Length: 254
Image (cartoon, helix red, strand yellow):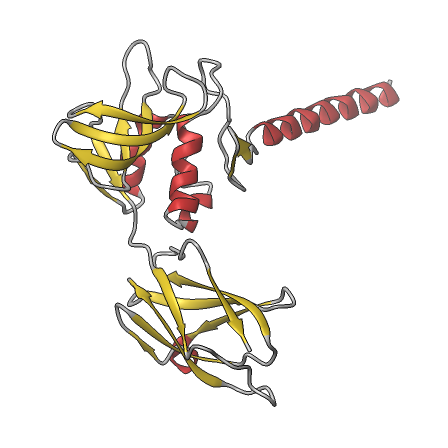
């Protein structure tokens, strides 16, 4: 009898493990309608069975369009679209009732669409907004126009840095390897707290603190780095709000 109970317990645990594994795989959809989105927690298929999911796209836009690393946190944007505006407020985002370019528009739904809808704002005109979205009455990804008043709230992304150039240009590696001053130009660089460097061999390094980032302004970062070999590097920056530059900046060091 004891052996039978043990085996029964084993099968229950095994079945539970399979169920958890199946659920985790179900929500790990990294490709949807030809778009690649690593770590995206949402289904690609919407509740109505149409290919593409509005929350999948909105999460992707925040993470890879606006560089928001915060959305990877399991306490960030999850659940149906209609809840995103309230969640955004609790997470410290600015939420407004008028359209803002690059913001996430939130529609709180109807009896026909009880989960609501979210989309990223691409353009604003006198009659409404043009958005990018997934799963709105057709399969996949599309650009679509909505009249004024359709979206009740707009989630404004955190300020994103942009990278323009690396100075001096051309830049040369140090031999022997030693710390040297360099400069990065761009926009919204005054809140940068770290600089991430991917080296030609694939390794990575992070610069932080006044010793390695001695100066910063809206349009320029002063950095001290050891670039000891020639080759193709990638530079990225991260702000105090955990927002990165997208895309990263390739730099060839001679």
